[in-house]
Length: 202
Image (cartoon, rainbow, N blue to C red; front, side, top):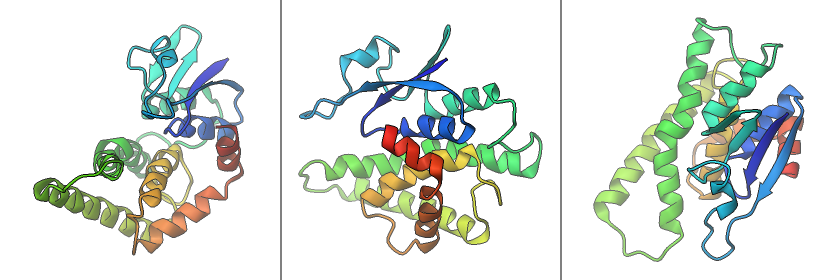
């Protein structure tokens, strides 16, 4: 059975959400951040050398990195849900957004999170770079969602799971102002039963 090593206040909710969408059996091992430093506990390092969440264990396979874990889980599901047919246009849209979440969007969003966690005098070059990247990314996302319901087209996929968690972090930092298509999208996907279960369990 798949075991998800879940860290509080982390992106490992993605894995729980996918498993709930697919109705696949799994178990959760909870790990808690240090309340003062907010760092991951040493218990995660015993599972994977990177000591980061999510970590998935299934038999002799141990994986870190959200997108890799989601792809592994999708390979275990025989119904073919939540991933478009390979070589279709939707499939390549799916791949782009699956990796966009951590490849392009993560850096400016997480950097903003870190900058808001400490007192700082400001760095014009850094602040200008982050603002430019956020505007570029959110403009692209908002325009995409103005034309279609989900990131890979008209069907909900695992790419939406990847993107939603990143966008929720952005929303918590109050950097989605004026992005009405993104906000409407978040309300829509957050109403899904599997999402709500994953949030409750995680």
